[in-house]
Length: 328
Ligand code: HEM
Ligand SMILES: *[C@@H]1O[C@H](CO)[C@@H](O)[C@H](O)[C@H]1NC(C)=O
Ligand SMILES: *[C@@H]1O[C@H](CO)[C@@H](O)[C@H](O)[C@H]1NC(C)=O
Ligand SMILES: *[C@@H]1O[C@H](CO)[C@@H](O)[C@H](O)[C@H]1NC(C)=O
Ligand SMILES: *[C@@H]1O[C@H](CO)[C@@H](O)[C@H](O)[C@H]1NC(C)=O
Ligand SMILES: *[C@@H]1O[C@H](CO)[C@@H](O)[C@H](O)[C@H]1NC(C)=O
Ligand SMILES: *[C@@H]1O[C@H](CO)[C@@H](O)[C@H](O)[C@H]1NC(C)=O
Ligand SMILES: *[C@@H]1O[C@H](CO)[C@@H](O)[C@H](O)[C@H]1NC(C)=O
Image (cartoon, rainbow, N blue to C red):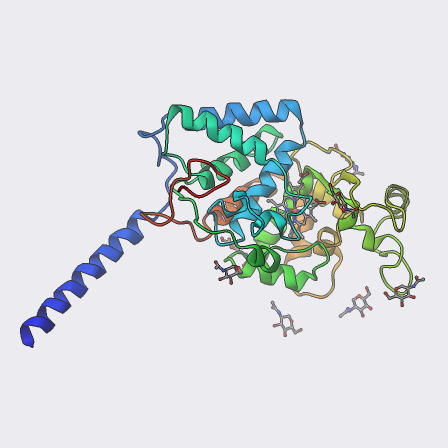
């Protein structure tokens, strides 16, 4: 009896040590692949450059993929899994998320030099950084060592991802649910300085937003433009730029636009216009609108925080061979 309780406490001690060492090794590090795939960063940079030369908007689409990956079951490339129960069919992604073919070709380029070593989740994180940098934005060292998940979570994507119709408190709560605060909400929303949105995501503001009138926090000439682009009862698939001033340039115009009531989505404009929350969002919008350096450094910090959401490390998950399917 005594012996067995002694050995079980020894076992407990050993398991505790093992767990600790797993926790320690689970930290992501920028040099994770420096010996196993020394050219990784150059390969990804070159492939993102190639994709952007074909279509500049792709930088925005690729940045968004990392965000939509990380908010659902952590940054585990779950968004890339094909299949009818996949996240691609969740409301925030359907007819919207794009860039999957580009990720496929980057993965192939990486596999051809370092087979079976680099996760799809890490590729998404590097691609997001390069998309921002190659659009004129800031760079940062990307922590690496994530592994790929074994399941997609369509319900999770519907629940966890913020919607353009959400109230500010709801958006802040969805960020808080993954460990991000209201500073992260504002800095990361600055990702909307590049890319486009479909009429379906903002047409609720244009005609009968409240009491039969358009959203009063949408500037009148931009309102007229958007009403023209997205007439009532029209197909919601037409797109327009978030930042009408410098569509493809990663800069702080997004925040200047908000101050001029030229935010595209309701979820953009409320960061500045909402009176529903005693959060820091309004004053941060003001700061970023006049201080691009501050926006860039906060954005980089927030991207690193977002990239750290529940990564799979150690022996959890796997290194997918094909980003669209788990290994068989
Ligand atoms: C704060 C909550 C957010 C909401 C409600 C939101 C919502 C949206 C919506 C509705 C679209 C347009 C989708 C379409 O029409 O198909 C969009 C596009 C985009 N989002 Fe967000 N988003 C949010 C945060 C973020 C974050 C944190 C990032 C990245 C840091 C981001 C990056 C982008 C980019 C780059 C695009 C353009 C994609 C393209 O042109 O293909 N968004 N977002
Ligand atoms: C799916 O995502 C939701 C919301 O993030 C989470 O609560 C749930 O545990 C996830 N389910 C699985 C099976 O991972
Ligand atoms: C959000 O978190 C960052 C650290 O990650 C911190 O510097 C910042 O002050 C926080 N913002 C708020 C509003 O708490
Ligand atoms: C606006 O929408 C509300 C409810 O959604 C409806 O009751 C009202 O009749 C609409 N007003 C106009 C002018 O269409
Ligand atoms: C948008 O286009 C897709 C196909 O690309 C279609 O299935 C969908 O119904 C369209 N949405 C709207 C609102 O027309
Ligand atoms: C466009 O950007 C310039 C700075 O390059 C700024 O002066 C101007 O106010 C911006 N216009 C709008 C509509 O945001
Ligand atoms: C917030 O603004 C709305 C109008 O947009 C107004 O009706 C409401 O009273 C305001 N609430 C507060 C707490 O100031
Ligand atoms: C905002 O203020 C209200 C009272 O005005 C308070 O109940 C709430 O806790 C505050 N929220 C935050 C995030 O500080």
